[in-house]
Image 1 (cartoon, rainbow, N blue to C red):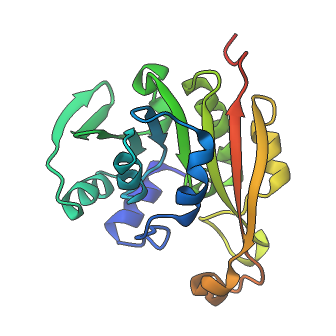
Image 2 (image 1 turned 90 degrees about the vertical axis):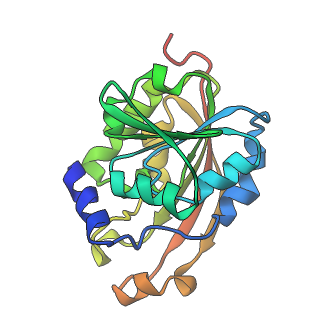
Image 3 (image 1 turned 90 degrees about the horizontal axis):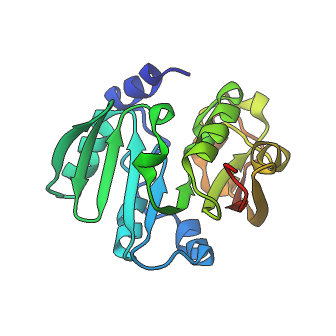
Length: 223
């Protein structure tokens, strides 16, 4: 899945994946990461997610990355945020008080871009990618993060043959396969949400579960 795919989705406003409200799993489970106030947190493939505003409101410094400039500019414009715009290597960096978004390809980010990050929120990143890209995504994010970094990961599980993604189905064995060598993986929530998701039912999906995981990167990461 090439960057042009996502840019076209934003250009055509085909953004059913966008969640206008603050994600309830973020509000419920983020405190379990025990990220200290003022800490640096990362939201990969962030789109124009309002979850970034919630994280900033909790006192965190928030960094996101997003391929589509339309999504980034919509985030700032729709939330009436004044920003500065600078170029940093291959990225255009949009920044306001306590929050910045790197506009460009996630796979070109370096550890220096995420210096000091202690926690990650992944609601729509891993499940946005097809199977052939998910291992590369997990490997790259491993390289970006420091030991003991914690991640709140949200996934969908449904019969993949019933609907082409994105979002894609990512089950518990795959989460363990992707992250288990580098992280302690703990599932903290599993809920049947098909009744609340008419767009999935309309596309023929017969079951849909949302799962939440806590990942903690091992202390010997990168050693």
